[in-house]
Length: 127
Image 1 (tube, rainbow, N blue to C red):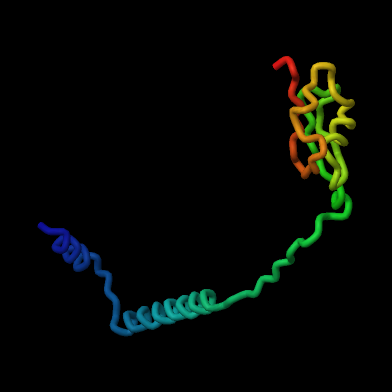
Image 2: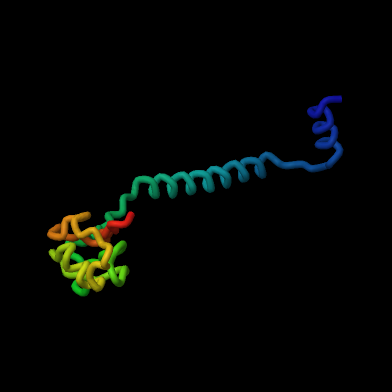
């Protein structure tokens, strides 16, 4: 016996009867619900909400002229130092306490203008 035959047998035996008017009412109700959903969906996809994007053109005032530079290697106090924009490698080395005895002073350009988040690494003559 097929699934269709089982279903038909169950349907007939269940005494579940739906009148023609009930079927029409169900179809109309389903059409209203489906149509409402479709209208709502179409309105949502066609609606464009303008979004204003504010561009940040300047750095915040408290860090506008400051930068952080990592000074390491053959200096007396290697660390991260806060410098002003436009300062040079020699300024960062002075802030780190200067060169150690075995520092290779010619290993980098002391006149180089530094940038935020840059690392100044002083090599040692011994290595």
